[in-house]
Each structure stands twice: as structure tokens, then as C-alpha cells.
Image 1 (cartoon, rainbow, N blue to C red):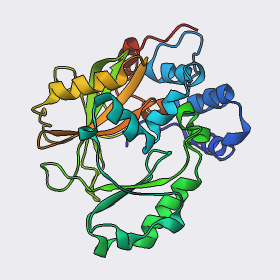
Image 2 (tube, rainbow, N blue to C red; image 1 turned 90 degrees about the horizontal axis):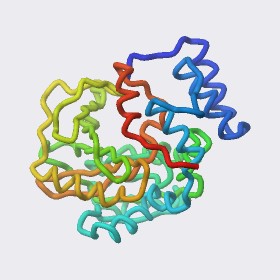
Image 3 (cartoon, one colour; image 1 turned 90 degrees about the vertical axis):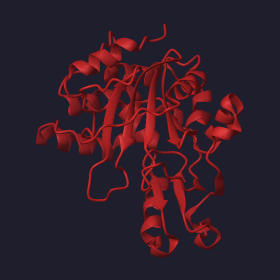
Image 4 (cartoon, one colour; image 1 turned 30 degrees about the vertical axis):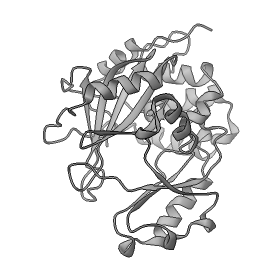
Amino acid sequence: MSNVRPPIVRRVLHKLLTLTASLYPDELYLRLKFYFIFGRRLNLDNPQTYNEKLQWLKLHDQHPEYTKMVDKIEAKRYVASVIGNEYIIPTLKTYDSIDEVDFDELPRQFVLKCTHDSGGVVVCKDKDKLDKQKALKKLSKSLSENFNYQTREYPYKNVKPRIIAEQYMEDESGYELKDYKIFCFDGEPKLSFVASDRQKEDEDTKFDFFDINWNHLPVVNGHPLSTHAIAKPKNYTKMLELAAKLAKGIPHVRVDLYNINGKIYFGEMTFFHWSGFMPFIPEEWDYTFGSYLNLPKL
């Protein structure tokens, strides 16, 4: 993770705030959380940084249609209607509760995800070696959490907590599925980053940022840079075109895609990267990203 850590007093206060999140109105909660993480007041009157503007959008850009775009089940239907079903990872099963999950009906390899959060994921490469109780415990914990209370991300407020089983996918690496995350502003792709090394248990995930021409950017945001070069996908232009179609008419959204031997698949749409609570190193990139985000008029 990033080496930017708040002093211990702010970390403790932040933990207490998180534990009592449901007691606070949205704006007060965001102001307190922002201060505990960044050590300065949240400027909502004239936000300048990317992280500040994301907090502003949480409060002022609330549209019901965003809910279906973040629901991992409904998003597939929405995305298929916009760019086509050929970009959708096949769904194996859906479950309304932990009790419904039946490992016997799933193939040897699969992925389980919670539909209403970020992080409730179980990747199974070999069902015979899977710690099923551990997997169910992780999913159960995610199902019980209210992502909207924790981050005040409005799109998740009305997503029904469910579990989706998907087909296991792997890229040319032979061990992982790199995630290409494209930042779109007013429907136009501007920046992207690649998440890699997620399946290496002894290593941290790597985040490598690129401009629209695939020039590597010297920015760290939440995870370290990779130690090796990340190749530009051969059909990168097509990925940008698809992201632009999905982002049309939206002030800001991150469109996540996968690329498997030239075949593009939709991952998810994210309206609030890191929930707007992750420092950039160096800090100037917080302002650079923020300069691309034009807030809608109230």
C-alpha cells in the first residue's frame, strides 16, 4: 500500500468514525473522513483536487440509473445493451444468500463475487484445493456490510446484496487477469492504470498509470509500481472506444476492462476511484486528475 499514513491519533479517530458511520449525515461524515485521512479540510465550495471533487459528486450527482451500473448482475445487462453481449463474462449462477451457494454445481474453476461492494471476491483455480469455509466466511462478511454507509457512494445504496458466480478467466500471463481501468471524463478517456500481480500471495498488487498514448506516468496511488514493463494491448484503441461508449453522458466514471489474447471483456464501472480517499504520490497528481473533472452545475 501507499506509504502515506496519517498520524496514529487520526487513524484511531478514523476507525471510530467507521464503526459509527450510520450515525452521521452524508456531508459531515465525508468531511470528517477526509480530514482524518488527508489532514486538511474538505473543500466542497470550490474543490480542486480529484479526491475533493469525488466527494462533491457523491453529494450532488446522484442518479438512480447509476445503481444498475454498479450492481454486478444488472451491470452486465446494461453494458450488453450498450456495447454488446460479446463483451460480457459468462455468469454461471446467482445466489441470494450464502446458504444457496452449492460448490458441487460449480466447475473446477470459477469466481464468486458480491454484487454490492468492492472487494468481496473469491477466485477459485482448483475447487479441490479451495478452502470453502474460508471462502463462505469472506462472502458472508461482505454481504453483511453496507458499502454506502462506509463510503457514502450513492450508487451502491439500493443494490441488493447477492452473490454471482462467473466463469474463471486468465490472460496471457497464465496465472492472473490484469485489469485495465480507464478514467473517463465527460465521456472521454483521459488516463488509465493496469492492476497486476493480484494473484501472487507473496506480493502486493501493482498499479501502473498511463496517459492516453500509453506513456507510463510516475504516480503512485494505493499500490506500488510494477517492477517490469506493462505492454500496451494490441487493441487498446478499441478498449478506449468501448469505455467512451459506456461513459457517455457521465461527468466521471472509471470503466474497467479485461483483455485476454485480444478479446475484450467488461469488468465493472466505478464512479469513485478508491472512494476518493487515497492520496497520490506525488500530491500534484491529485490536482492533475482533478483538472480533468468538470463538475456539473447545480
